Length: 245
Image (cartoon, rainbow, N blue to C red; front, top):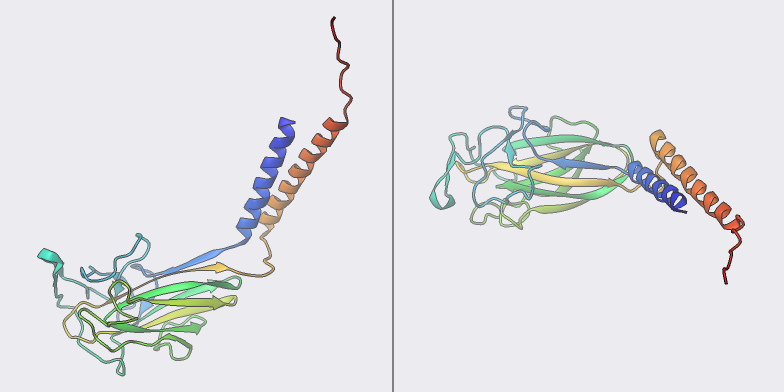
């Protein structure tokens, strides 16, 4: 009986593992060397101002096209300006910098994306691979906020905790490019963007990979073998009991 129970446990474990393997997730986040921009081409990490939202894990970070963050942090968290801090523009003018990240979904997926920026940003989603332009050929997800607060835009998309845009996404299989038009509204102050998102497969009838089919089949075989052993044990005649008086 113990062996039958063991077969059943192992079989169910393999079957569940196969189901999990057939689903997928894709992460979309800002980090040095990931994606590109229209200024230098290469995204780099920047020193975050004390007022900026701080990442909850080490996977994503504030990025820019160069050293446009804090030059250094002073006492009390004050931020020394960097010579690379860009000049001001407006949300109706040319973006200070445009950031691109392309990703591919093998099946329909849904999730959300959080975006921060100093001073603000607009977000677009284009079809296919895009590495130029301001994203206007695609779908506008969030418009930039030109109302300034103490440190950046006072609402989404801003740079402080709680001023990020939380963007729901539900996409069919295909290749997409996230395009972020970032705007510096005050000259000589820190500039950067940060984003973090995850999409999970929501295909109604997912097609498992061949390896997943093998795991599922092996799991079912082991479960069936365990059931067969239990039935055979139940039908086996029991030895006669001898009573000593």
